[in-house]
Length: 157
Image 1 (cartoon, rainbow, N blue to C red):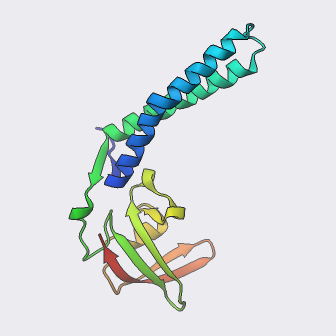
Image 2 (cartoon, one colour; image 1 turned 90 degrees about the vertical axis):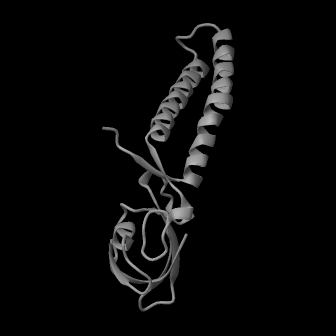
Image 3 (cartoon, one colour; image 1 turned 180 degrees about the vertical axis):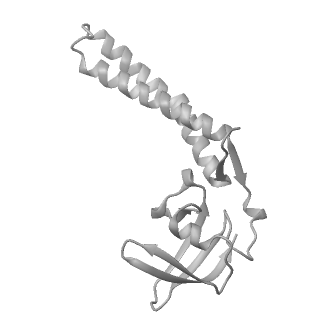
């Protein structure tokens, strides 16, 4: 049985665009680099050739990963995300208890997680603590700096 990959529609589009770029633009660029490097002659001492071959291998590996991931993808349609409790796809607003700090996170699958873009995995410590909770609930998250408590102030699509 294949292991599914959970993606939002936005994540799917982003990975599809990356795959398209690798297949159409990057492959052509690295092929041109290889052609130029080969024209220099002796491949044994040709660092340009080695670099281009390594880049080609990296591109082909990434293409394989993206194709496999998209083949296994289960897409979370934001229109069907419920706002009564936190689930994958939810946009969750939190307020740190005892502080004025507010945080907003989109709950996504692990491959789409990007904390700098406020997208956290449902498998992360914060994501696990949020799943299934409702507005007004207080959750506790174990962080390296100690326990932190957050109140869920809103759940949106």
